[in-house]
Amino acid sequence: MKKIYLYGNWKMYKGIEQSENFINDLGEYMEDNSWLRQMLKNDRLEIGLFPSFTSLASAQKVLTSTGLDKMNVHIGSQNFYYEEKGAFTGEVSWSMLNEINCNSSLIGHSERRHIFGESDEMISQKLRSALSNGIIPVLCCGETLEERENGETERVVARQISTSLQDLDNNKSVVENIIYAYEPVWAIGTGRSAMPEDAEDVCRYTRKCISSVLGEKYSGNAKILYGGSVKSSNAESLLNQPDIDGVLVGGASLQVDSFLDIVKSFA
Ligand code: PEP
Image (cartoon, rainbow, N blue to C red; front, side, top):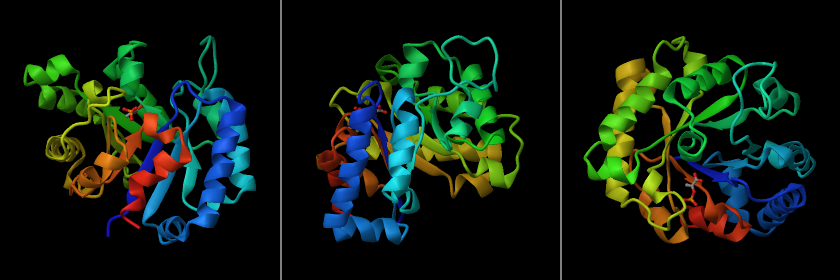
């Protein structure tokens, strides 16, 4: 059975207390549900939680105090800036993430691209910076509804993936760390998930794009997540697709039950 990656993007929800409560509740859920303990212990499941910046340090502390950090559960940030320090008002650097032992980050989430205007080039710089500075990048890509309707999905995904990956130091230990997330913009937060076969087609194509820049050696084992209105009722058929290794979840990740229900059928 393949390992499943279950990542929760809390966006601009949950302050410090709510983030801590979630992690404590997750610990209790694990005590009561041996299926979850077994999946994590046997490395059949990895959980990633992506709280807001202000909650990161305390979430990390609770993760450590509950021992969940040793159980295949980790905390990541939703974004970061690629410079170490400087006159970049409002930004948080990779070195600040290193300081709180936060070693993973989303990069190029569609809300960063489309609301905050992050370009492919900026995302590429973030990817490089993450790989050089001990941050595991979760590189997001995906087309808008207009692009899909114009038949441009593959062109957009190819551009986003190749701009990010080109000229990377083709060093196995670094490049292998990248996690990819295909998230069609029209499916995020809309309640309208992609059909499993459509999601599979684009994830397979994403693998092909990775192969054409980095080579098959890296694309075969690349972890590709699908994101966009994933919930327990549609997760199983998505996760059963051969090129989908996990899911990046927004809305349904906000409650412990709805989040873990996503993988329950794989226990
Ligand atoms: C996301 O934020 O990456 C996401 C996929 O959100 P949702 O699950 O709410 O569509």
